[in-house]
Picture 1: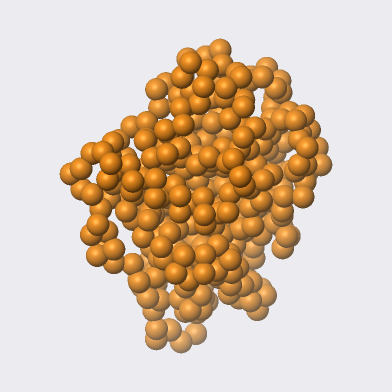
Picture 2 (picture 1 turned 45 degrees about the horizontal axis):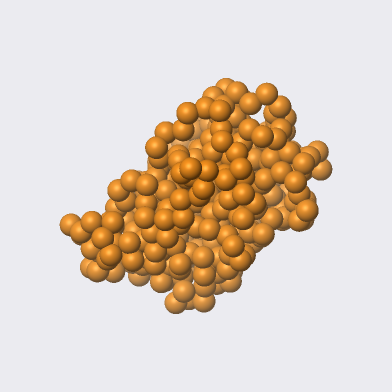
Length: 371
């Protein structure tokens, strides 16, 4: 094959931190209140703006709360599990490494007695019909390391008795996540909107708040996990008063990403861009017999963390990835370390389809060079 002449404008395809939004400039952060207290009126207003814009963008149901918490999506989800789980049996589902981590924490760290684990290999989903929604249910919406998502929210009943705890960090803002079906939603800034790391977002339904105020876990809770005082929710957490010190620079960056999303048409536009990006790879895979989606069926195929298998030995796959990076056309596109050898391209809304159209030309060229 002839070596392609053009290169993508943005060669960043990491699944976290993800690519910055198109046109990003450090000048967008000039209003960050650096050197000012996050507890002062200006700092709190900036943090509350991030919360309010998030709630509006996601069109959260009435009564749902949204707060900024420590330690990225991991901190937000651990905070939820350690604070809420215990009074009911738990069904936990996993089909990739991050979901498996939540199952391990529930079984080995929290040591809950009544736990059922439903698991599937990479590329597959567990049987969702097995889930008992009189139990609390823990799952990821999108498997970041497997490229497999749940197909929709139809399997989750509106009249569930247990809580649904969903790690949605690589799905929110890119997939149709029905928030009313979920009692806990967590994500991090560095995923779909390409923000900076270390801050988590925690969204709670009224049912989750009721659990917090009616149940006290039997285990000690670290300060950064505590959401109640005297048996009542601390509402200030969801109004811009964070538990610990946040980065006002990172918050400004998240605001810039939200403003960009608003400027292109909000959530519908974000979902459409991610789907259009996936479609680039779908057309490519259909035309080339040597590359395949890791997801076994189209209905569970992720449009953010697009995971691919290549008909090459593992050492040749590594060589292919290195060649793409050396040419400056695709960085960080190797599969996750625990996943089967292959490729993983981030295709969230901050990625341009026009860049992907160029990348697949380089991918075909690189394959011919290393096979």
